[in-house]
Length: 581
Image 1 (cartoon, helix red, strand yellow):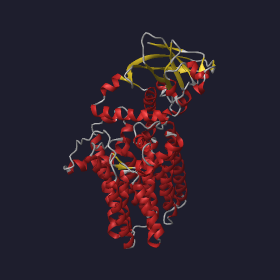
Image 2 (cartoon, one colour; image 1 turned 180 degrees about the vertical axis):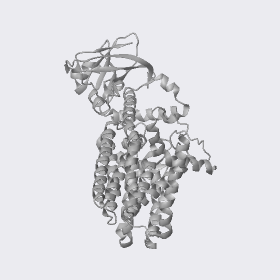
Image 3 (spheres, helix red, strand yellow; image 1 turned 45 degrees about the vertical axis):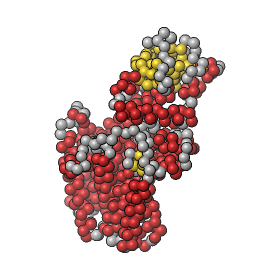
Image 4 (cartoon, one colour; image 1 turned 90 degrees about the vertical axis):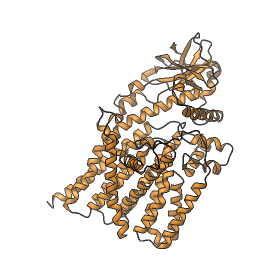
């Protein structure tokens, strides 16, 4: 048996590195391939609109939907100033913040001299997998949302890293307080940093001066948060759950905590989608309740005995307490303003970290056992296998969402919208849509975000005035047809055109123009952000139906003849594809 132990330890380390690397690499690739390409669904557009008439500080320090996102707003305003609102820059900044969070969480683990190499390697595997699990992609694939959430999380992680050192340095204490303010004013759930730091200070037996200073800082953060002016916008405010019903509130909170388990189980039940799982509510409820019981087992003794040690244990406990408070703030805040949807994918960003922290604490406990520790050390691998289908399916979900966003962006560039889709919107959502269209007109005037390339300026001009003599044969071929009618932003009729087009060697024309029989450009079309090569290599050819383009014809006249030409690199193709009506 003594000979077996070193081999087993080495095998566990190798498997942890390999499987963790697979999760990390696949997440990086598919987050990039499925990243959100424009911001209409976020809050930055509202901030941009204010920035044109106010200072950065005034535009950033606003409360939207209960969140004060001051520091992420500064990132967005810097992106607006220096990169014309380029959404891709926000994606990379958010991804960078996510890597910073992981690094800050791992530093105390690798400094912990009481944990063996196997425990450190496994803990690294758990932290990497928990943060890069694609179930969180509704946040991590969106540059704006990832900047908000990951900046709050990185501020919290920095505070966790330094909290134990505040007993001997006022400078360190000041950094911890500043990190707390960064977390608090990056995302509403970031306010959970203050009760977390107070509990950690208690468990670590920090001096009373540190605890009092943290308490004063928490009070100051709460007062400032409450005093921040609210940015009003038309969002439906109705709650189906009464805040006065504690049983219903607790039930939804347990479902919120247990939602990652439910999503993981649902990924294995491909024949029954999530909404059709009759036991889904019970699964989330009881797994969430079990998770809360386990959390109590880990947290209560540390509060009672005040014997928390820095390192793996403090990292796991910090992450656990912080996410418990963050989820509590989400549940309470949503009861007051919106319906709490415990299964909404956006909450997986936080609830998945709750389960990550439980696994870290289990590994820490196992390090103090001998042979009985092996079932616990093998548990992360079992969970990784269990979570893989959800990770895998999110690759396709991300790409489909990106394609949907891109189609909406094309509609906004053309200033045309489908009549049937508009009629299906509830009244309150129509108000939101109208506000976004108004904001889009301001971005159009300043050539920002999706308008930065200037495609909208081509519409209404003759093709010879836009392209001049820049023509060449492209081997353009394909087919397209009008598949929906709508209206322009000025009330004129419009038509949506969709189809497929290819150039030489099966390449995709990314930008196309729609011209009428007089040579006037009546609209632009854009291909979906997927090529046959990407579809074949990364998506097992399962997204073939999404390869194609969507465009709109402004001032549509059914009596005129329309045709498409590719316009990549400001060069018009000699060939054209007739639009079938």
